[in-house]
Each structure stands twice: as C-alpha cells, then as structure tokens.
Length: 328
Image 1 (tube, helix red, strand yellow):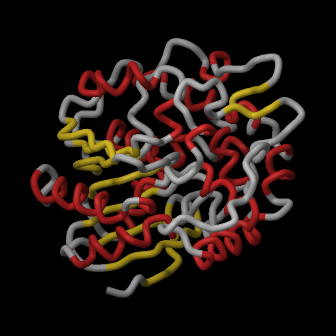
Image 2 (cartoon, rainbow, N blue to C red):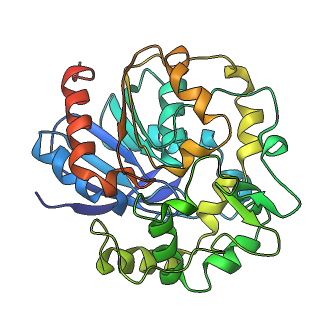
C-alpha cells in the first residue's frame, strides 16, 4: 500500500498530510522532534486492514504552516486543527492516536470533542489530569540542572542548540530516548531523567551513537534532518512554551474525564515513565479514562514506541480498533 501526500487547508493552515487506504478514518498525531514520518509503519498497516490512515505534519512542523505568534500553539489550536482536518477529509467522526506531544493532542481531542473523536489511542504520554498548580512552577530544578521543559521555555535558546547540526541532533535524541540507550543513563528515579545541566544543553552528555539500533536507519535520520533543516525547531518548541497557557485555558474542564473508549501503549523503558508523579498515575488511569480498555507496556522499548516496536503497536491498535472502536 502506497503512502500518498497532499496539502490541505485546515483551521486556516496549509497542512501537509500523509495518508493511505480507504475506510474508517484514523488520525495519527506525532510528537517532538518528529513528523508524519514517525507513523510510517502504522500508515501501511492500518491501510492494509481497511482503514483510511492520515498522519499530518502538525502545526509548526515539516511542510505545514508555522505561525509566528507564540500563543498560536495552544492545545485548543492543536485540537482545532484536528477537528478541521477531519472536516476537510469528509468524515463525521474519527479515531485519533497520538505519541509524545501528539498524545495530549489526542487525549484532549477526545476530552473536548467526543462527538467527533469516538475513540483515542495514546502512546508514551498518558492522559494527565489538570493539576491545581501552574505546571512550570512545579517542574524539578536543582542548583545544577533544570527540567528540560523549563530549558525549552526561553525562545531562541534551544533553537540555537538543536539547529546547529540538525542531523546530529536527531541522531542523538532518537538514540538516547530509545530502549537501546545504555541503562545507566536511563534509570527511573536516577535524578537525571529529563534534566538539563545549567550552563549546558539538552544534548549534554548524550554523544551520537557509533551505530544505530536495528529499528532506525541512516535514511530515517536523513529524512528527519532534512525536515528540521528546512523548518527549524521553533514551531515544535513553541508547544512547550504554551504549557502554562494550556493550564489556564483548560480550567473549565478541570476534573473532566475522557469518556470515549481508549488504549494506552508505552515502552517499559520510556523516560516519560520516570518523570515525577508517573509512578502513581498509571495504576489509577481508569479514574480519568473510565473506558480505558487496556494498558500495554512493551518490554525493552523506549520512548519512540511506534517506531521501536511497530509490529506490537500495530497489533494492539488493530485489536482495539476492531473490538472497541468499530465505525458506527
């Protein structure tokens, strides 16, 4: 099954989408620093199973528009983009899946618009209920280091580091976030999970690997590098710069639950699972997602779930789509 590409206009954006197949619509939302390409294995598998699979370059990424204004990257904008996309595609409803930053987009699409998104699949990042505290005020920091999301806040700082050599950046980020990275750097609760040394950078202490793990090729690195060389990292970083704004905008939905059928998939070695509070959240996810069908934890898998373990992810998604999210 071939993957096709086109540009559509959705929510006022020129949006690039990759798509394959015909049938019930499944929208796939990528994370940082990625693109539609992170779903390359799922697009084909879903199409072969009788679905219309669509993976956009999201706002700020790839060949999709990159608004200049920082406040145009809130979750309300991002969910609005996905609602507009399914309108353009002529679908009344869709199943939405998201990985990394795409997961909050998917969870909130299901939370805010269950009339349009009849089921949700989250990869890596679980649904995070709105806290009582402004997010950036409770992010960890020490005399020597700050949480990476705090490092990303100041416009221009992370861009300068990551854009210095996009190919080297991608190679290091994908390797060190994977289940193949040396365990000594990735132990949950080690104190350096997600931390950036003051005076250093996001890539500090993470050298480029001499050889790539089996799930990642030089051609994959080349593709991502070309995309970020052209588009830069600012668009994706602006998602982080709206974390507090999202908290403010979502206040009316404080305490709301995701009511549609849901599936959560993560790697057991995903760094996200080592972030503060995650150990207590996963066992009680059903409180916030009452129709959560299953939590799938993949042994040996790191953060790049659907790229590291495409066969297992495809199987779990297809089983969920068949049993919990049939087309009405």
